[in-house]
Image (cartoon, rainbow, N blue to C red; front, side, top):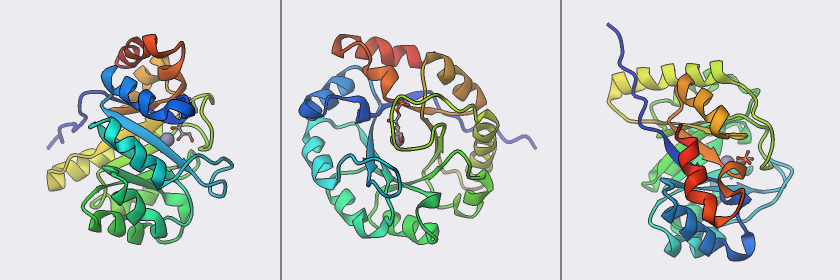
Length: 227
Ligand code: DX5
Ligand code: ZN
């Protein structure tokens, strides 16, 4: 029996890491109006990754600016103690890294216990098999195509890994009927976006490629990523 692909229409999640932080609420409204489906929120702790951004209080302040899906990418370690804060701040999806600690299963359980969606993210070097035994818990799989920490880096062509994640997701969807997003994050531009979608991705994160050339271009930039 051939398992039908569960790949969905391509959706775009602009990363506000590349936005103007002095007017973040306004920037979120602009990308919402420009057609973004998800708002990708990069949380960095200066420990798990060598950079700092913001925490749950900022997410809470941004929440009234958009009704779109708040997709919170936690690049922090440890994770568990801060989950409740991010839930209360209005996150719709909370994604934790496989590499953030020894107890990924517990972290995903904790996220799901709050009734929000749970995502799992893999650094470029981490084998896709590391999430095999949590596939029944996740709503989103995030393949990092840069080493996390900074915007504006070059795309690492992990297309075989994206394809392997697609196969795992399709198997889980065939088994349980659950829809799981396959997200790619890092160095996504109109050219690399095509490659990611061909490999099976259906949710593309982009910072530089969305925010370049100013607010008048956001809609055009988002459209260009859809291929
Ligand atoms: C990197 C972040 C990404 C980043 C993407 O650690 O997770 O979301 O903002 O930026 P670009 O699209 O510029 O590579
Ligand atoms: Zn991210």
